[in-house]
Image (cartoon, rainbow, N blue to C red; front, side, top):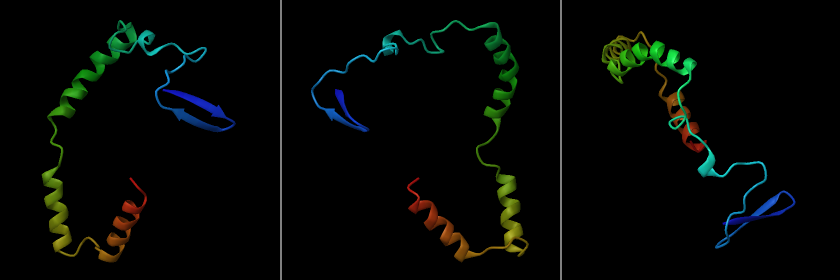
Length: 98
């Protein structure tokens, strides 16, 4: 596919081949981190970060203990709950297009 530039507007023309852009390497020539040999810095970072990554992977996605504590505090009336505000926040979130 090729794009045609008309001022600030661009039009995609179906069926046409993409033209190379001057100064930008074709995708086949771009080396990704997986194909690049690791440098001394990346080896150091890897060895430093490995224990942290392992510990993080062992953690549960949801802290059930904290969830239970928050539920109990809510039931005791220690946490304020405003259903109108919650509904407005949910509506705003969905209207934002996320």
